[in-house]
Image 1 (spheres, one colour):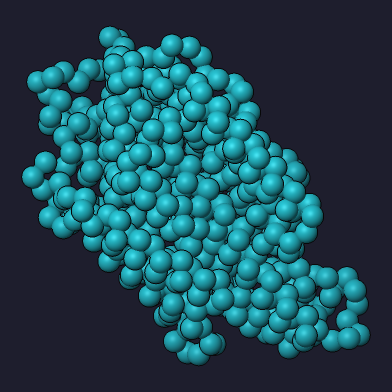
Image 2 (spheres, helix red, strand yellow):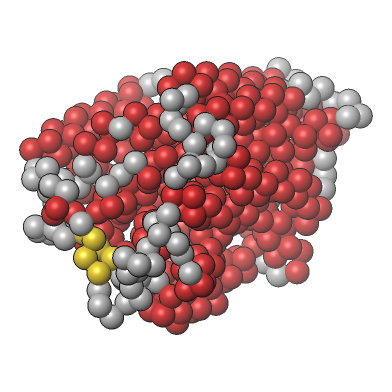
Length: 522
């Protein structure tokens, strides 16, 4: 393992410096730097949810199968999760600002490719490239915030603003996608990345410091390969089990992932300069915060996809109107992202997190009670607003607990771990809860499809609600209504699963984080 002296930050003299006299309190340059970092942060959140409302149109336009449609949705998040640890460590070594600028340029090129994708397979590849480049941006932005703000209360507020901007991007994704569908085409929204990247490349050398940790050698490529070999098969296996059930291929993929995970961990224990410093997990705050972030994002990631589809496919709203209905949840997330760090100055962070998770669990419970009544839309918006309130809280305080508990020279690696579990959580949520909902939908609709329905139409109805809606003119009207009812039932079951998971997280936060003090006296 590297010693603390080996991981002290080394400043690039050509960059803006944080001197000892000014380190305690951030000045105008640091706050302008945070403003600049907010732009790619919002962009990364935007790309996670950009296609939620556009998915039905996109799937029809590119003739995507249901499996391809899911990979279009979550290949971005999977690639982020797969490469974040590597890129976080790389940023610690070559310089976080340098990695941010390189990744931003690649992100812009991949965005243009995604905007003009001619086939579903091409779009999946472009989204994967976006995910890999995004993996360079996320830990860099978080680590740079830690470099800009040394004073604990300012740092916590900085992380809260980062979380708010990321959440704002996630919340605006469906709205932006809806607007682009109305006035342009589904790919136009990807082009928003280009001016943001240009501005970032111009201003970064003037506003952002270039900090890095000294390293005795290059990144261990064997560890990189082992990490990818552990993560991607395991995630694929879980995704397939949730979608089609347990089978030898699915179990084999999970087993392969576990095997390589063991090999990866053993290698990290032997290396003097590991890709992932396992000593970070000695901190209880670090480990518990990661668990809460992971499973909290599993709950919200899957539910987010289902709610946006509900507004468009079940309620029949246009993409723009459906996106606007996501405004109240977005506002709740913004309030939590900024407010939670301020409350945590006087109330122990563990209690703040636990209280927010209890409210979030109640929100998921409301979503599980949909019955087609006149107040159904109110339940959806109120329930999802509470879910987003919990998300904003755990993202802001969890990120601070993770990054704040790491040594200065490991802030990039700690940031990467935080973002890895968050983006893996969103992707797993889409895969698992989306598939749970799909199983309930298929079981329900299969018993209502007429026996004389042509095989092609039966397959379309059984596949998903959006494929049923795309063939609505050829289906009996009553079957479409039953398909909508089946989808709502699937949404309810998935939401109930989320409520249980988040309730367990609330208890975990109360028990394990209760002794962590607030920052009011920091």
